[in-house]
Amino acid sequence: MLTIENLLVKQEHHQILNLPAASLVSGELIAVLGPNGAGKSSLIKTICGEWSASQGQIYLHGKSLEYWHRQRLAKHLGVLPQASQLSFPFKAQEVVAIGATPLSLNIREINHAVQKWMQATDTWQFADRLYTSLSGGERQRVQLARVLLQLSQAELAPLLLLDEPTSAQDLGQQHQLLNLVKSLCQENGFAVISILHDLNQASRYADKVWLLHQGELIAQGSPPQVLKPETVMKIWGYQPELFFNRHGQQILV
Image (cartoon, rainbow, N blue to C red; front, side, top):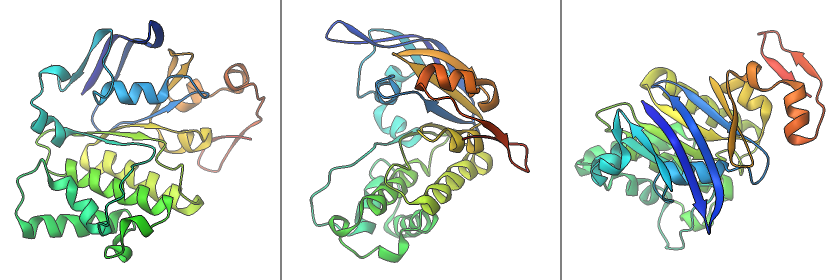
């Protein structure tokens, strides 16, 4: 579904990102991990087109992203940044409805979709509150509902990019959000690339891990293959202990 080939990103003549090859398929959740400055956000910015690559290609459904019509691409590729700056006095549901902009929905369909995705992201209870009055975590989930509405009429399996989606959430909301994302992959065929910092959340929810270090993709594979104690020590400078829960999933402490 998404294929990255020989991707090189430079800023002011400095190499920011170098990915010779990476790919994911519909229904797959990829956790992008790495220490601060590893190139995680740079990867998201490059895939969504905010940054230009110095060389290489990114293909979505076999077609280079540069050849996608912008309106059609908006239905198939959505990004949730770490934070969204919005100072206008919009109600939360009006912010979510912005996600209908690239779509051909009538008012009734938009209203139905707004409610559906706000309920899915546990934000419907403050639909009529001003967006600016919400907490950081509430705003983050409202913006996720907006992006999901944006992708809701994709003709092909959509790609969702998440830049630290749990950063402003409390513990319960972190797992609710990741469970939602996982269900979108399993039940709706979404492909998701998500930056995470919690290695145990990556082990629990991700199908694969892309491990970045100093702008290089140094490992990719299933969480147990990549997140070995010796690798964590090498990359993060911390020696964890490895345990397994009753479902056989690994836990790093």
